[in-house]
Structure formats: structure tokens, C-alpha cells
View (cartoon, rainbow, N blue to C red):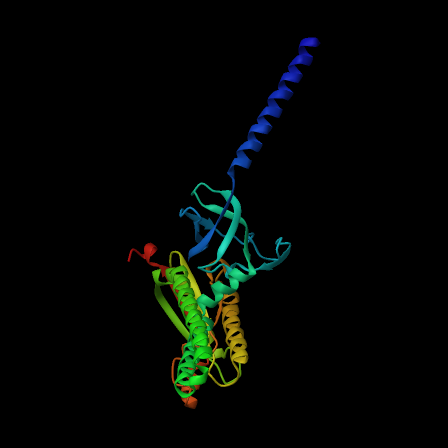
Length: 307
């Protein structure tokens, strides 16, 4: 009986040690990386870590995307996978799979970083507008110097301040272009343009078959990404045009997702481009009609395509 009791103890120890070993293996597989999103390919994204190493992150429908705010990052907001755009600094937690990919459980980022990345995607319009405004102010200051000698000293100080702002904005543009330059690494394999009536955001029925056909083609392409960018004409305020362009992009995105069966893992966040990058002149009714649009593109990374 004593020997039988020791045998039970020994068996129990073996089970405990085996459980600890298994727990150690699982823990060892858990990983966390921080870095910059440099590309999206299908349901994966590439994150360049702080030491310069690229990590392939696999996204799933269970991946939690969180926008954090506050000094201690206590305020959190749940967002969709489409918020994960190139140029966004992120923190990823998950487990490595047999393909050496980090399967993301959570992806976190700062609200301010997302705003910068979205501005970059929108063509750096806010920064460029500020640059143009500063250059205009510099010219006005120079004219004031010529016409009013008594204000030379004050104007020179204003000029210096404006030039510093211009230099800072140019530096910001260069840095943003560097961060978002990876979009030039994609081939455009298909494209559909959806036009809208003035002040309207609903997608007309005639465009639905075109969008579904584009979605069906995309589903046959290895590592595809869908890019959706909404635009408005220059009629109305900048705030209104920004709102219209976003609502138009979101409505087109809904058709791609619901009727075209495009998963959110393969869609970039819809871009609200406002009245930037007009397709035609805004001085005519015909040109304004061309500018009220959403452009949908099927993209594939050139590295995948071999070009």
C-alpha cells in the first residue's frame, strides 16, 4: 500500500511538471511588438519595429483594434480593422503561428497618431494648405516692408516667424511622405468611380453591379487591398465637403462589404478627401459633377506581383 501511495505521488508530480512545461511553451509563444505599419497585403500587415525589423502581422475577425487616449492611456475606443493604415504607429500583442506571423489579438494606437496617418492618406491637404497660407503671409509681410519703413523691424520678425513655420511644414510634409511612401509600392489592378448628385451621399443603383464586379475580381487576386476615397466639389464649406466625402466613401464601402463579400481585413480606412485633388474644374457645373465622386481601387503589393 505504501508503494502504491508513492506511485500516485510520482504520477501526480509528472502531471504537474508536464502542465508547467506546457504553460511555459504557450507563454513563450506570446509576443508583443511596437512599430510603424508600412504595408497591408490581404489579411496581413507589415509592421517595421523600432530596431528596423519587419514583422508580418496576421489580422482576424477576432482581432481587437483599440484607440487609446490620455496620459495613462486609460480611455479606449474600439475601432474596426480598416483603421489600420500605412503610416500608423501601433502596438501589437498576439501569438506566433507556424508561418512566422504574429496573429494579432490586440492592436493599439494613439488617437493623435491615427489623425496624422489619416491626414497623410488624404494627401497632406491640411499641411499643404497651411504651407500655402504661410507663404502668402510672407509675401504680404514683404510688401508691407516696402510700403511702410517704420514697420520694417516688426515685419522682419513676422517674416522670420513665417519662414520658420514654412520650414517646419515642409519638414512635416517630407516626413509624412517618407512614412506613407509605401503606397507607391502598390499596383492598381482595377478601379471604379461612383458619381453623386450635389449634396447627396446615397449610391445610385446603376453603380452597384460595377462595385460587385470589382469585388469579385479582387477576391481572385493574391494579397489584394481595397482603397476607397471619397471626394466633393468645392461648392459649400470645407467642413461640409469633408463630411460629404466621408459619408459617400462609407456608403460605397458598405456595398463592397455586404454585397461584394469583401472582408474588413482587406480594406483600407475610407479616405475623406474633401474637395482636394479635383478631377475637373470646379468653375463649371459639369466639372463639379465629376468632382462629387468616390474612387475605389483594387491594389496589390508590387512585391507580391513580382514587379
